[in-house]
Length: 378
Image (cartoon, rainbow, N blue to C red):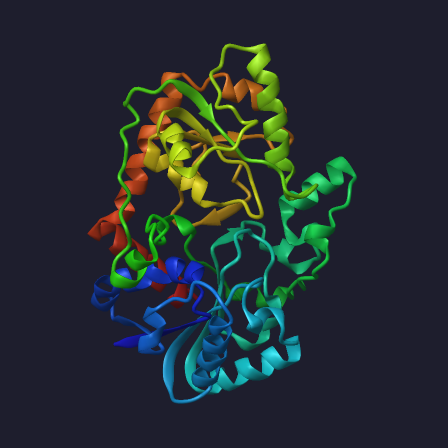
């Protein structure tokens, strides 16, 4: 029996994402792997304050001692001191110590995009798991504008700069390390439907199952979207979507949510449940919780083409689980105009059925098999 020990920064966001590991502990055990946190206190995530940083430092210090089999480390590139404040040399020194005390060291990249990678850890870890991985992994061997391929695409197309995504440099990796890359799992199977903190803490060995609404339910809105851009390049997919939808309101008979106003969250959820399609453009990353809300609400997800990356679960199957949009928005109005079609309803049905599988025992077993196969893959 092999043992996987999880070491993380104790932030509740990461706790939600890591939860499927503990929720599938029985299925992992059946396959010869035991899942555990480093300490009993790791079952209690931190929601705010400087205390999280103190616990993070204590967790790293503890990981440098004792003897372990497989250690999985999860620290976010923009929230943890280990990634934000330590120099690459100091980080390397600590990773070397941890590696001395385990048989296998695995880095869990927690970024929301295919980019913003912590590749300075590559020489010191055995494997590098990422939520969503570029199919063309050689792109990881060069500097990409804004560290995201879609940001580089819009930078080249629009010829504008975006300091919000270029002020921090993320080093690329070397070709010799590409064989360490592995596909982790995306936020869709994390505990993203636990609304109150008590739900997370009181049920450490399960993931909150959402209430699925049938795609056949009566709906009066064709497309829901209320996003807005927050930076010239990373936010462009959302801001451009908003512009085009405003144009469509006056040009066609399509029923669209009033994207010019902000509404309370409860009202926003009801609106999503009353929509035939849900638009989910790229944000800081390609994948977000909005994608999976579409499946839960029974709406057809419309999203920019995801064929450049791979992820688990594979919920981005063009024309099967979602409707893709061209990155240049040239087909935007044409795609949205079909929101009321039987074709899109069928896609919504297939997507929901596929997503529901991962909240079952067989789904947990599939997840365990995926993680283990990536661990053991040569």
